[in-house]
Structures are given as structure tokens and as C-alpha cells.
Length: 166
Image (tube, rainbow, N blue to C red; front, side, top):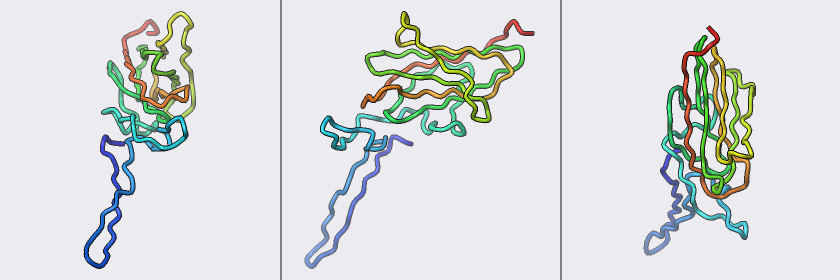
């Protein structure tokens, strides 16, 4: 997805002129994911971050040796590619404000098999981390674990370094 919004316009020709009717203005995320308390569709508040589209493992943005700030829209998932060479170790961690909602991190191999899930420690809310020993090629998926209606800003840190398994 991009930051662009879709605008649908109906054009009707009638005797004496042309009428334009705006049918809908859709937020960057699907409008069904942005609902008011009365269950009516509301535009926004979700804007995609600059890493989109990274909504699937094949479209994962590489995060090897990166620290970045991202945002997760309601109903969306972010995929981050990671490669760890033999004799190296990778660490992936994320921090966010728990007041914004709950995040879940899961590690997948290159075939799409789930390998590990990060667990939030009760004494460290707003922090999740995973370690992986090389060789490894796969991706990390970030998803929401709540029904929040606003995006969750988060920081993701992926560090790959020489390790003890030489």
C-alpha cells in the first residue's frame, strides 16, 4: 500500500450539464478496519509507513543490521526479512508504548514455517525480543494482538554479529 488514498467519482450526464458525485474516500488501510463505536466506517486514522508494501513474507523488507521506526495499522501485518550467516547470531527486538496496543512477533523460515514466537515479559511491557543462530534465512512477522483502531508506532532493531558457535 502507499500513502495515496483512493477516490471514486461517479460522473452522470444529464440535460443541461454534468454532475460529479464523490462516492468514497478510502483510508490507506481498508475502511472495514477503521470503525467508529457505532460500527460505521470512519476514514483513517491509519497511514501506512514508508516500508509498505511489506504485508507478506515474499514482500518482506530486509532488516539485517538495521534499527528502524515503523507503524502497524489495524488488521495489517509487517514482514521483515533477516539473513544470518553461519557462525553468526541474530537478535531482533521491538519496543513500543503498550498504551497504543499489543504487538506479537513471530519468526518464520524461508519456507514459511513458524519457528518461534516472542513472549512479552510481565516486568518489561512494550518489549519483545528473539535470538536466532546462523545459518538462517527467513522473516519476522509483526502483528497486533488487540482490536485497536489506531496504528501502533514501534521501533525494530535487528543486529547480526559473530557468535560463539564457530
